[in-house]
Structure formats: C-alpha cells, structure tokens
Length: 203
Image 1 (cartoon, rainbow, N blue to C red):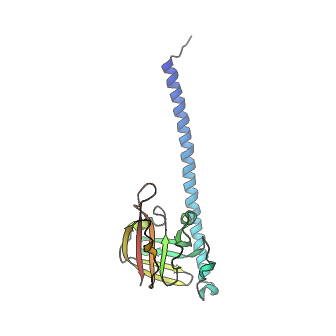
Image 2: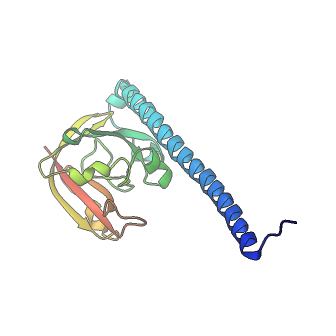
C-alpha cells in the first residue's frame, strides 16, 4: 500500500496553490491587457471622429461668423485641435478636464479663454498619453491651435515645474497666450506630486 508522507502532501498542496495562482494571474493579466487595448482603440476612433467634427465646424457658415458663446459649450464638446509640429503631436481639444475627457483627448480648462478667443487658453492632458511628448518640448517650439474660427500659432517662451495648487499659471491675461499643463515627473508611478507647465505666446 502506497502511503503519502506529510511533507509530500504539503508539497502537493503548494503545487496546486501555485497552479491556481498562476491561472488567476493569467486571467487578470489578460483582462487588464484587453481593457488597455479597448481603451486605446476607443481613444483612437474618438480622435478620428473629433477631427471630422472639427472639419464640419470649420465649413459651417454659422461658426465662421463667430465662435459660439461660452454658455453653449458643454463638457466633451470638440473645441479644436492642438498640434506641435516638431514633436509630431496632433490631438483634439475637448471641453472640460474630467477623467473621461482626458481619456479621449486633451481638455480645455474651465474658466480660461476658449480656442480662438483673446486671453490665456488653458489645456490639460495626461502625461502618459496625449501629453507624453511634452517632456521633449523646447523654448521657441511652435504650437498650433486649429479652432473653427481659424488657425492660431504660438511660440513656447517658458517651461516650468510647479505645485498642483498653483492656479496662477492659468490666470487670465490681456494678451493672447496658451498654457499646457500635465503631471510631473513623467515616469512617476502613482499620483504625481508636481505639474509640468508649458507657456506660449501668440506669434
């Protein structure tokens, strides 16, 4: 009669547990990768749809005659497109800076000038998606904002790192300027402690 010793029984339990754990990790990993893939695809399709929306706005006589008032702009509305030619970056600018909005594009910061308006336009984006390339931006780089009312060109004049509580970076201005904000450091894991700010003035 074959007898199994206690150490052998313990080893078998360990093996079963390891097989079960590997299976769970495999399932969880597959689900996480699937979620990331679906999210990236959704964002890509949304960007294409946003560009089409902007093209329609640009050809609309109603929007050509003047930018819509602030009261008709809703969260998620397509306001324009931001391009940084040297970095090869092009992304739709949406109204609002909620997590849902920033998953699909970059967001116009409420209370700042709208694209196409005079003043300081504030735009926020995630450091690990659409604003990842900001880590390579330099002073004098050109930034383009394409809105329904036309194309505006800006030139980067300063870059700084500041605290999240520094609301002065998007304070109103009398001139035409642009402020881009993302989290910093770029490769930090978790909630980043600082903000990376790029400021540009209209050319």
